[in-house]
Length: 624
Image (cartoon, rainbow, N blue to C red; front, side, top):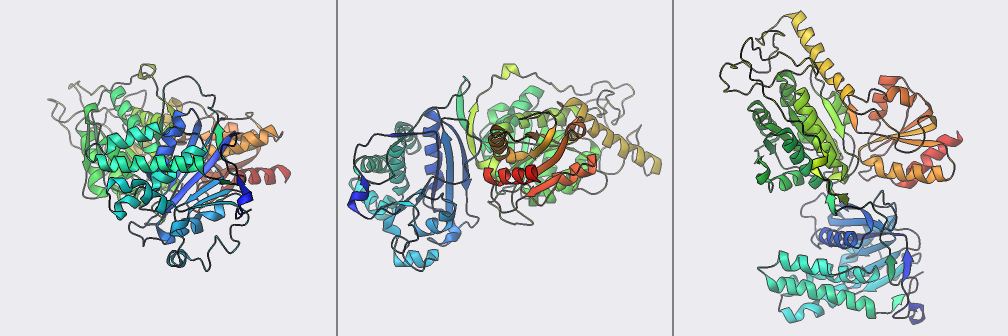
C-alpha cells in the first residue's frame, strides 16, 4: 500500500525489527555510481558478519542516453544471518535513482516490497524517456508496494553545498546520500566507507569531504524522517560462519589469485596474455597488479595474438594463460589446436556471456560448454573445468595450473558473467595446506626425443628451448610418434590422435570421484548442475528436502573428462534434471556418454536461475 497520508508513517525511534535475510537492489543510470554503492554496502555488510551474495547487472551500452532504460545499471545483494546461496530471487527493497531504473526493475520486486525513489528525478521529461505514460507515484502503479519518495537530488545538493562543488559534481554524490539512508535502515557501520573515501580521494580532499557529507546526511535523514508504515529500522544478526579470516571476493579476483597460487605451487612464472572483452577484462586488471608474484601481463592487439603469446610463453618454460569470453575464445580456436598438437601447457579462461556473436555482453550465460568440449577442428580434446561460485574460482585456478603442467595440455576454465562480477565472503586459506606440484623440466640429453612421454600420465616431456642438447622442432604439423619429426603417415596420425585423447581421458583417474552435494547417492531425483547454477540448485534442493522430497544435488567441477564414477552415480536415480543457462548442452553430453534419460531445465534470458524456478521443475518431476 502506498503511503500518502501522515498517519500512515511510522514514528521516529521505533524499535528495530530483526530479520533473517534481506534482498536489496540499487538501480540507476550507469553514471550514478550504482556499482560503487553496491560494493560499499557489500563491504559494510561483510564486516557486520552477515553471509552474503551479490549480483551486479550492467548495461551493455557504454554511453546510453541518460534517463533511458538502456542505460540502467543495477546491483543486488542478499545478506542474512543464515547461509546465503544466491543473490536472491526477488528484491525486498528497490532503490531507484530515476524513473528508468524503476521501469526496468519494478517487475522483479516482491509484492509488498519497498520502493525508495529519488522523487527529484520524476519529471515529465524523465518519465517519457523511461516509457511511462503517467507518473507512477500518482497513477496507482505502486499501490501494491510500500513507497518512500525522497528528493535525493535536492537533499544531496543541500548536504554538500558547503564544499563549493559545482552542481554537476555535487549531484555525483547522491549515490552516497542514498547509501547513508540504506545504512541506517539496516544498521550498517559507515566508517569503512568513510575510510575508503578518504583513501581514494587523498589527493582531492574536497571530493572526499563532499561524499562523506552526503553519506552522513542520508543517514541522518533516515534516522529523523517519518518512514512509511511497514518500513523502519532493521537488524540482521551476524551469520554463523566457520572461524577464519574472511574478505569479500569477486570471481575475477579469486580466479586471478588462484592462478597466481597455482603458478607458485608449480614453481613457475606466469605470462598472462589477453585482449579486453566483457566480462573477462577484470582478470587482466587484477593480475596486472601482481607483478611481484612473477606474473607478466600483456594486453595484446587482438585475441589471436594474445593466445599465441601465451603459447610462446609456455614453450619458453613459463605457464601461459589467456582469457576471453565466447566470441574471443572462438577466435583463439586455431591457436588452441596448436597447443594441443604441440602438447604445451596452456590455461584458457572463458568468462561466458550471452551470445551468439556479440550477443548481450554484460549478461550471463552458460552457452560455451559445447565450444569448450568439442569446439575445435579435428579430434582435439583438452581438459575443461568449471567454477561454481566466486570463491570456488580460487580452487579452480590452482587446479587448472596443476592439470595443464602435469598433462602438458590446454585447460579451459569456465566461469561466467555472474561469477566474474558477483561477490561473496571468502575464507582466506593457509597456503601451507596446499601440496606443491613443482614442474621438472627435461634435462636428459641422451636419446632425447621431443615427444617422448611420461609413462604415468602420457604427457610429453617439457624441454625448454635453449637447453644444450635438447634442440628440437615444434609446430602444428603432425609429428612422428617416436622422433617428433614431421610425419604424413596415416597410421602414425591415428596413433598420435589416440595418444592425445588417451592422455586427456586419463585425467579422470587423477581427479576426485564425483560426490553428492546434498542428499543420497541414489533415489528418485538427481539435480545435476555445473558452474554458477550451484547456488539456486543448492537452496532449492535444501528447501525441498526439508519438505520430505526425495531429491539430491550433484554438481560438476570436471566437465571433460567427466568424473570416472559419474555414470554409475547417475544410474542410481530414477530421474535426472539438468538446469543450465543454455538450450541444453551438459544434458546432451550426459545422454551421449551414459545413455540416461536426463531432462534439461533451460534458461537463456541472460539472468541467473531463481530458486523458485528450480523448485517448480523438481515438483513437476516428483509428481509426474
